[in-house]
Image (cartoon, rainbow, N blue to C red; front, side):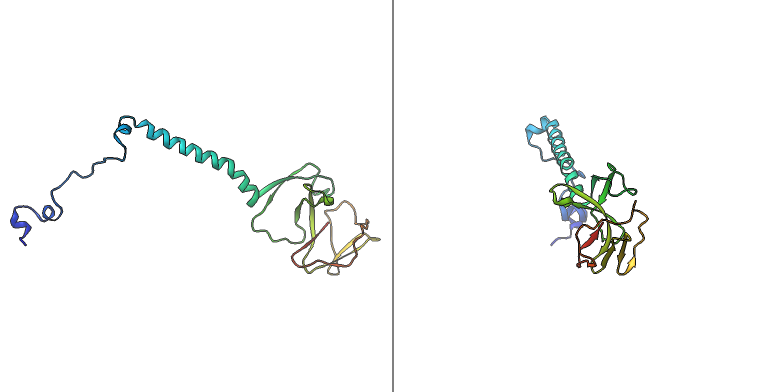
Length: 174
């Protein structure tokens, strides 16, 4: 081949063809849409509104299922810590049960479906719980539990056999 400089042009012209204007937006609209560009805007706005509406409807369910939920204290059994009717926000994320935590047992209150029970964790898996009902004293692994959060000692025997070793992966609440 001939040298492009010998042909009277520069090297850019010979390799790429003739120079064009830097950028010309031809768009993807058909001739009808070119006459009415507002249709494109309306379509995008409607699509955006549908996405926002779907997220607005879906997000509360996602948050309640995976992040946190709200509960109302259903009784006075947690006095003086929690009062009847107080609202609690309970987190579902990254939780490992430990003694002293307040938990919500969903649908397990007095074996009634749909009723929640709010209680404090006394022991976790592998620990042994014993209650001296005459003294009203709770023991965990042989040590007396200090319970400044209760109104009165535990005198009521509800038929559970003590001492009781909590199975692994489970909790004991009062």
